[in-house]
Amino acid sequence: MELPKKAAKLFADNAKLQKMAYNMMVEICKGHGGKFRFSSDLCIDLDYGVIGVTTCNLKGMYLKDDYLLVESTTTDGGCSKDVHVLNKQSLEILEILQDATILGNEEVFLKEHPSPETVTDDDIESAWVMLADVPVNSKGKIDRDFLYWEKGTDRKVIWNWFDQNHSLGIGFHIDNYG
Image (cartoon, rainbow, N blue to C red; front, top):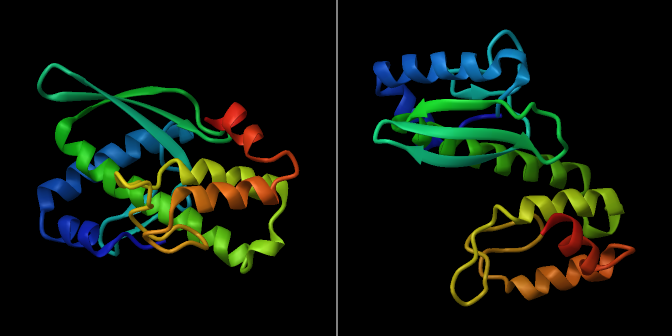
């Protein structure tokens, strides 16, 4: 999967940031303990802006001035719950890569399920987890395209789709996934 242009340019224009990102990714990749999973020898190719990723949620908490505590977990429990302490500049890299991961998972989902009629309950549960990462404005409308819905779609329309298409309805998602 390719990094967004903003991220690729950020890495290409800053050798120090490249080195820091590379070192950070190698550390996080060790043993699949963090956000990034090996897809080849390296998790990230800074020259070409290509990464291998797995779905992980990052929970951050600031410690003092220079460090950020990051706990990584996956939606399916696939990553260990190792805790990594990273400097604040790393947060920008992690946010960009997390955005790339979310968008990449949506691309895979859409490729496997070109129409809403082809999804199973398991697929719908995965999509519900992805929905948590979609920003919603003060009017209750999504702030970017998400799967089958365009930016500006009311979240209630999306919730209604989940309710109608999952065999146990939306209550199941709320009880189990928040």
